[in-house]
Image 1 (cartoon, rainbow over the protein chains, first blue to last red):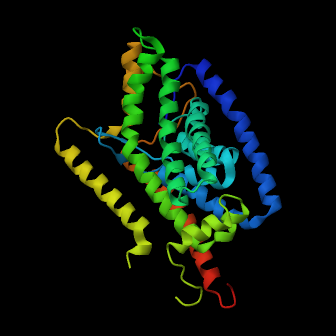
Image 2 (spheres, rainbow over the protein chains, first blue to last red):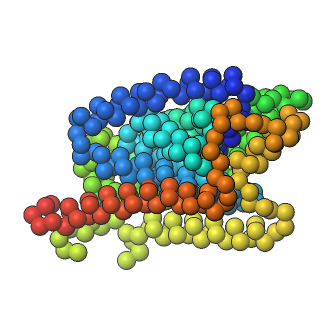
Image 3 (cartoon, rainbow over the protein chains, first blue to last red):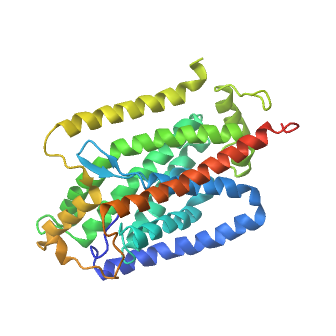
Length: 238
Length: 102
């Protein structure tokens, strides 16, 4: 989903940077607030960020015969909202732009808008929509992660389409072309990502249900309901 | 005993299907498994009628000199993430096991 350095005209680089920056700045403010409020959330923040690091390093083969990587932003956006996710995602993208030549500094604004902001934002809407319903929380986590992943690639397709409209058919034709490259490839990967993050979330609520509850991600009843189905092992008996 | 391991089993099945699909697809000819980033860049070149080499970086950037070095850096990135996940989950697990802690 990285747009390579040099592959966006500078005007578009500027546009996406201007959209991305407020989120990153908000992320810094929010993160400082969170740290000052309670340091016990830091390990969870570490895990959420670490998953973005791990999953975005894995180039997986897909049915279309090309490779792409998951984004891993679902966990972070549920626990810490969009702006902090934008900040963490931005750090990952900076690392990849500086050391790996995946994406670049000029296109980083566009890449942040797709991976660190847009995808997580839509994932967050899914979470908001399902949070207070009777939908199983693992299903919610699965959908949030999968949607955040796939939307990232839809936005990348859009960013490229508006910068490079096709001679015949314009932006729409171009969008369909890029959508076929990025988004179709991503469908199986986002399903896998959703499954893996749901599983990780299960282990997190088994070990630290109080953290998830305090952050208000899910209510105590929802967590207990999910744990009840998985039989809790009392501490000290293992 | 499989009652409380539904999610694990489902994830394993998902991964198995994924691997089988990969084996099937890679058996067919014409799939290079190049990165979709590169396929996208090639498509941009096609739409604009310029060659891929024509797109010069706007901001000069470091490019890993070989695939080996690139894979090292990617492995480092994943390792960093893995260390943090393992550390935190282990720490939480240890906290739970400590006597007197509910």
